[in-house]
Image 1 (cartoon, rainbow, N blue to C red):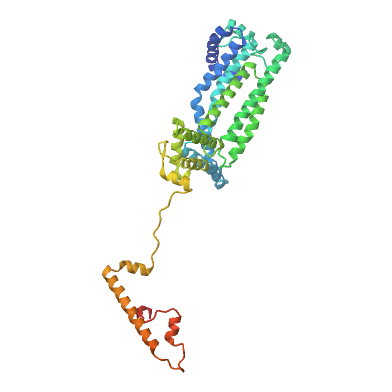
Image 2 (cartoon, rainbow, N blue to C red):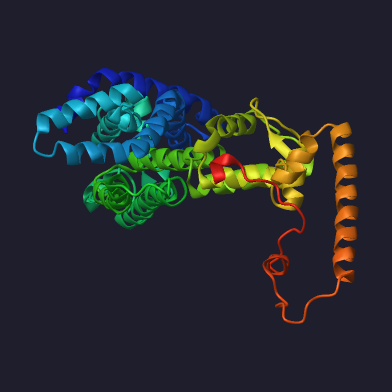
Amino acid sequence: MDTIASLFSFITTPVSWVIVQFHKLYGALFGDDTGWAWGLSIVSLVVLIRICLIPLFVKQIKSTRNMQVLQPKMKAIQERYKNDKQRQSEEMMKLYKETGTNPLSSCLPILAQSPFFFALYHVLSAIASGKTIGVIDQPLLDSARQAHIFGAPLAAKFMDSEEKVSALGASLTDVRVVTAIMIVMMSASQFFTQRQLMTKNVDLTVKTPYMQQQKMLMYIFPVIFAVMGINFPVGVLVYWLTTNVWTMGQQMYVINQNPTPGSKAQDQYLNRVLKSVTSHGEVRGRTRRNTVKRIVAKGPDRNDIERKFITGLAKLGLAAQEDGTVTKSEAAVLEAEGGAAPKRQQPKRQTKAKRHTAATPPAAAKSSVSTGSEAKTSLEKRDASQDDKPKPADKPAASGSSRQAKSGQRKGPQRPKHPSKK
């Protein structure tokens, strides 16, 4: 541990200085030698560090989402170049460069916290050993050694002997009970943080090995924290429990306000937006308008949850606009009432006779009508004169013309066929 402490000795003094400044503030409220003053100083150190790390956390969220989206392409590259590891690595790096993804971005917050974590560990170890460190002089050292959190000294560990705990003015039972509770809370907060990430903020339409790895980490990380926690001083357990609770709350906020597309959290978020639009008739809040704007920009590439949201707006008679707002839409009202937007009616195809009649001039049409009526009158007279003539008894009743009449053909003179149809 001395080797690790020497590696992070450059940051020990700044960390001890920050703790002392917070201790002055809380010491004026709770007393200089109380566990509240020193414990809240460590909590405030965590809050200050995590606020500074918010930009890295945003990069972590983006990197994690990009990795989820790239998993199918990465798997295809691995299958294509499974016998050429060098080409496989080159294609992976090319894919990362094209999409602007950094695989190490997901580890940046943890890596950035490591120096502060080891510096705090070194400060608390020095307090337990009765050594001054950084800006913590002898009076501050004596005050820190007297500080207890629920009966457990800041520098005490779960595995400490009874003599060492007694030297810090506490009992071994109190130390082990307090440290055990804190270790369980630390592991539980880590498990819940990873679980809400896997159950709510993962695109359920993409099944990749990355999801299986995250599921394994959900169970492995709490075990690692539990094993390592028995060797952490109470002050470090306060630090790590605080940072886990901060991570859990920060992630919960991100999941509720900016969920991963295609996840269960996105469905719940868009349902809340739709309910707000139903109540107020508009999209309230810049974050929600930006979300609607991204959904509109996707067009046909929307997932099922986003299409469900657009359909819900249509049932309300609203249409999402490119700027993230919603407006009244008659087409959306008709679509909601009738189930689909009215389609343009195509004109029915006319028959050849109707098209010929429509193309004929009125005068020609009138003459053709008069000619047809005259031909019909002459045919009727001809038929009547033929009926008046006596028919011979031996002549067959059915002649060729009568057979044609029975077959439904037109009586009278037939129009000659076109030469091409002969």
